[in-house]
Image 1 (tube, rainbow, N blue to C red):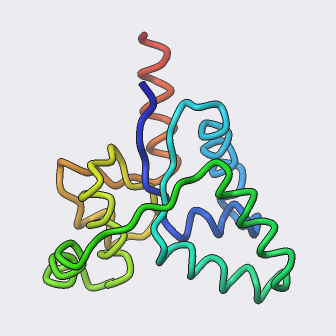
Image 2 (image 1 turned 90 degrees about the vertical axis):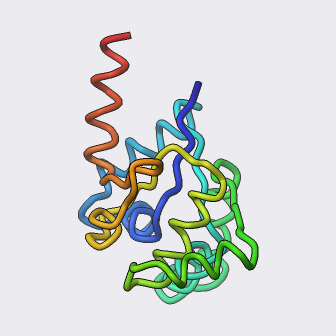
Length: 145
């Protein structure tokens, strides 16, 4: 069964803008394409990524990139109660807290980001890890099985 993972804004920007982490994030996206993992994002992540891509590529190219991405990545949302819980959390980065609590609500298996505060604030029911950690751990598991 494929892991269900929520992907943070920073990871999508690393991939779409080919930033420093591009090679490892590309492997993560390859796992999505192969069905090894199911990927999810929130509307807040989509909005932030679309804004940055539009600034860099222009609206038409940004739209094309996002549509290609959304062919493989699903958007999940949370209701009022989840948002209120996220805002009551001790996470200082409110957009990240909203995404994390949305992933919790949808019972996802992992939250993948390099955002330091989330890495420290995660609870065991929804571990937060970097793409490097996620790939390394799950490659080990695949070799065992």
